[in-house]
Image 1 (cartoon, rainbow, N blue to C red):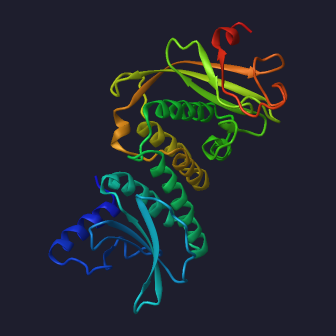
Image 2 (image 1 turned 45 degrees about the vertical axis):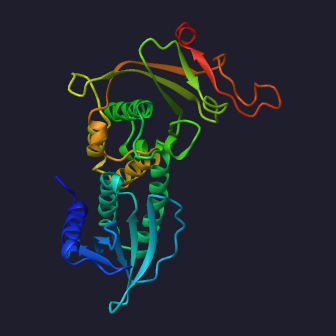
Image 3 (image 1 turned 120 degrees about the vertical axis):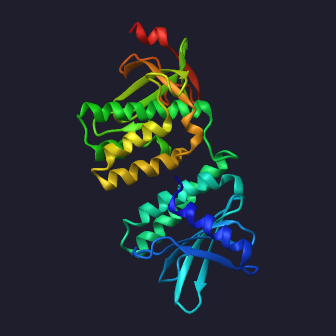
Length: 318
């Protein structure tokens, strides 16, 4: 089933065939005339799909350097309002762009302050640019999917244990924003690793990944590629939908979770329905005194970064 923004685009494209907009012009359809915040979907003269958000005050400019997206402000003649316009320049990305736009529209529906709305749009622009710049198709590769699934499975296990609130769990997922570990709770940090069956080691990607002010737990998930219809198999689309249901009781936690998914480069797409993995084993290792690791304090002076592999046999025998 198509989203409301995709339906608006279809209507605009169909109408543009018989009544194309003028050069530098646009054809817009209002998505919901009962909503407090007015959002439009449409096309430009070249049939590029467009999302437009109406505001009263002239919005601040936003710097967007992307071959896929552009952003500009458009004064509505006769209405004394402005449109914040996002335009997709690459038609092959329209399924991903459609989902991104719909997520933004849903979030806008919960925003009753115009300044907050404008900041939200600018924040999403930066995330979308990063997402499209990561991959030509705006989609994660197989090894990235496996790693993300492990993090989400860990999150699911935390929520299932009911030892932490949904708010605490959503806020603790700091890996997508570039922190040293994937999760940071008040009492410990957690680094989640996904490995394949038969793996003999775990790759540690920095001197800080197993180091910090808080105690660090290394959570290792063994995953195998699977068919999406196999018993025990998980996919990103199914798992994220399940987690979103857990977060619905707390709108702030839900928004935090969704933004973290964008940070890591995920947006719901049929591509992920067929990319499944089955978790086979979970192992937890507390990084304590004597744990084999490299840190900035233990390497020779002059070494500022390092990637290394920890032997699983060594960890298991501790």
